[in-house]
Length: 122
Image (cartoon, rainbow, N blue to C red; front, side):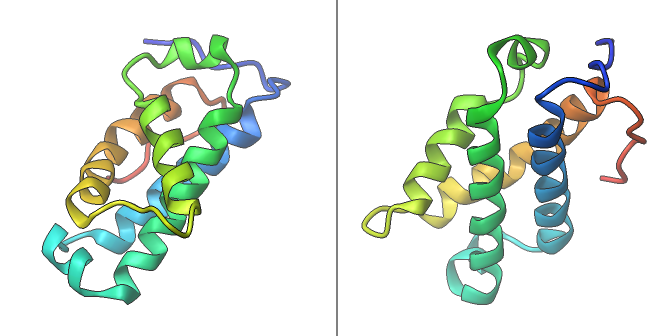
């Protein structure tokens, strides 16, 4: 088990944003499917927004902290955020859903290193 980061770590705000966005997407997509994501803009837009928040924050986390969570797809989330932020590009529903499927592991990994965090109900 990883030791929590120091409460003064400059990465904590980014990790917090990532964790909260991931939990929000997980709550929003509970019981849903990739097919629904493809067909329902009201579902897709908040999921995309959550992935953008996660990816933008992931880019700002220091390599030291990233190394504490080697199972997190740091580059994949950052790349997805860049694609979703570009008006000409994007992700298809399956690619987006693959990222949603990684969110429980992301939340667990971040919760292990964040001080004062309780386990999330995934």
